[in-house]
Image (tube, rainbow, N blue to C red; front, side, top):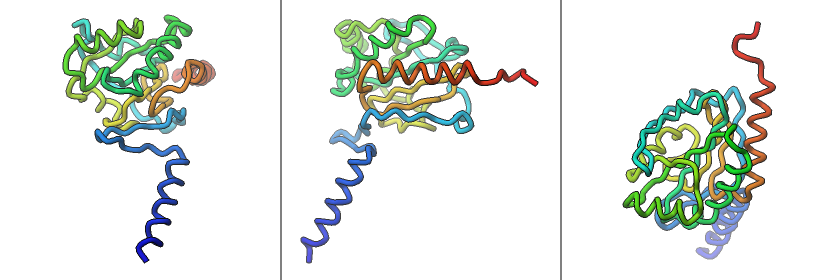
Length: 195
């Protein structure tokens, strides 16, 4: 009788994992599958407010990126999936140029030295806010669990989450195309002042 209960439970678990649902790893962190999830314009809510100090010790206010599409990547030097995607995100940053803002949010690293070494190792040229307690991720809690890492959030020019990638970005092209989709949508949307 017990064997019969195990088989359906195993089948259900396999079916759910095949659907691309997030899962929790042994450290309690939620790991996604890298699937690109657009958010409809009417469902985006309010602009994200986030301020903090970069790894280099400079003040940063996300409001300074308003007016352009912004890519935010939540990462940690301790996160294996983050290591896998780091060079892909930097390549997208280089390919998209200054028209798109990039920001990292470094969580749970025990020192800025560790995080800066990670950035040097992967040639990361965009800034990252240092959030050793992970509280900076609460700014995105309406769209991504604060325990999801890595996570990439693409904000539209008004600062609202337009696309989410939970888990490692699979390819540079995936991220570039997701950003370009948000840019196209933003350029074709009527301005707020239009009659």
